[in-house]
Image (cartoon, rainbow, N blue to C red; front, side, top):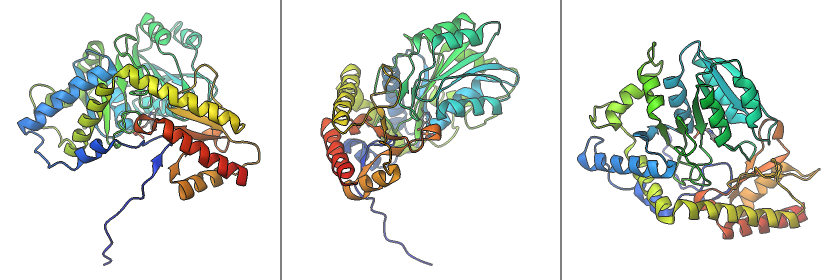
Length: 372
Ligand SMILES: Cc1ncc(COP(=O)(O)O)c(C=O)c1O
């Protein structure tokens, strides 16, 4: 049997589609002594997490907590609780994560109507209007910030259309939360999920979710049992609610880290944080221009926290990423699907969204592109 050395990760600047770098105090929180998951001190901390999540989501929803699992667990939580076989569901698709939602809705037995836009573009309200006309969908699902393409779809009109058709509105905020405006109550969103490792700048492992009273009522009044035991809100609410009935052992250390990450966000202030993300994005865009590079996603709807940077004709896209990592310790992401080989995905999320990192990245790119 081989005995390995302890693992010592290299120091990287995480400027890809996530995870982003975490603040030192978030990493230190992970090293705090463990508590039992029903310890009164841990329960008090869970209450604080719920309260801070409500502030970050901008909601009064009581059913707001972090699901144990990554962003995808948050997605499954929303769909499995709200969808029953035969339900009509409209899924907006303009990238990888919309496709995943459609796949999941189908697995729940839904009759899925797809509203599609070319990758890099947003979903237009008129498309959703057309899709709901003559139908009575139970749910309309939308990805706010498409991490695969760098497009930010405006939510308000689509949510109005969904509610006008009697549907619930479900929103993926995995990449948007903490990096740009997310206003769950203001936009009348019924179900929302996110992830910890993007603009919340916490390690991956928890999925903040929130259900409106109407969504919760829908889950409580189902005709069929929720097909997932682990993600059934009717059971999870017993643990995250006032009863504190054992359901599963909460990932203690991850909750410590999320507590600290949320604390830092609220200390910075939501609007100040969004503004910081905007400023670093603009700095990157300016710098890219001098290199003859641009942003591939739709003008006027480009994400601040995920930049789809165009790869110049004839450039070895993967080779540039390799050199960034090996010579400069910078991680950026590759394009996916139809954007494979055509873009680098440069994340400026949370802790990683700082002017000094943008400058470091631009210097590295200048050296690599001039030399290659
Ligand atoms: C928009 C979006 N939705 C969902 C997910 C899935 O989250 P996770 O990888 O944390 O499961 C991601 C991850 O990149 C994402 O960017």
